[in-house]
Image 1 (spheres, rainbow, N blue to C red):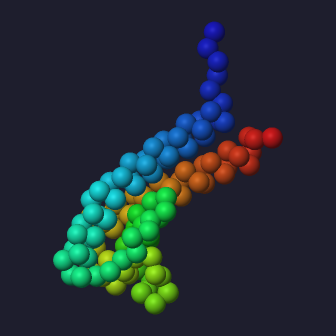
Image 2: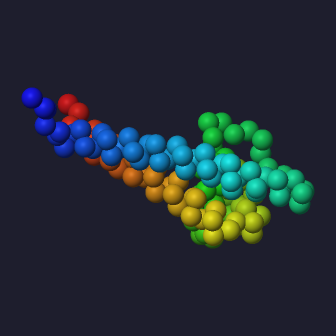
Length: 120
C-alpha cells in the first residue's frame, strides 16, 4: 500500500527544487557574468577586493546588476565596483541575476513556511 504524499512532503520537494535552481543559477552567473566582468575590469584597470568569503562576490555582482537603485553606489558599497559593473552589465546578466535572486528567495520562503508550520 502506498503512503499518501502530504503537504509537508510537497513543501520539502519544492524547497529542494528551489535550492537546486539557486545552485545552478549561482554557478551560471559566476561563470558567465562575473567572469566577464572581472576580465573587463583587468583590461580597464579597475580594482576590486580579492577576498570573497563563501561566494559573496557572486551575490554582490547579482545585487548590483538586478537592483539599479541610487542608494547602491561606489561610495557606500565597497565590495564590488558598482558603476563599472552596471556599465558592463547586459540584459543576459540581468536575467541571470533575476534567476539567482528569484530562486534564492523562493527557497527561503518555502523553507521558512515549512519550518513555521511543520517543525515542532
